[in-house]
Length: 254
Image (cartoon, rainbow, N blue to C red; front, top):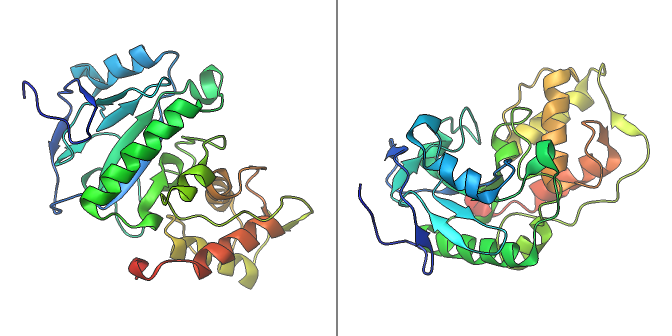
């Protein structure tokens, strides 16, 4: 492909060779938000367009608010890797991937600049409108790949996106107090926690044991929905926030 017209008005185009056709779906029904996790935005943009990287995203949003489109929305970008959400294992075929320039936890994780967030909001709103994506399917990379990925991280302003009608959100309960459930616990309460996380969409085995994989998923949940303290321990705040999210689940979730 030598070039294409951007799907998002005002986006620059820099074509990545790393894409293919969507498999078994005709259009995306999810948005996955990432941070780049590299030292510079320019380096991230170059890597996403390098044939040897074997990775790409549909969009990259720079810290100054510039939006670069690298893969057409009709095509399948290679951004999610091994992932899962509500029974979907080929998240790449189902999603639009948006990389947001930020050095990430490895290179000095920092807050996302206001201009960048404004650009992400406008981009997400356009994608949602074009593809009728429902709120509970605007997700973090860490949601669909718990433990393997932690982006866009606990500093990402999900509340601000929710105020613009993007994503599923409830105000998190205040963090604090002793864990209700923690590693080593077993029984019906652990099974209920695992069942609620699974019902929401996370990939988790319902074993009734608070094992390491359960802690990893709890931490992923906290990173998105209760970011004040991300420790993988199910305190009252975490459990209450999860319950309220499930009660607020839009009817489209089925």
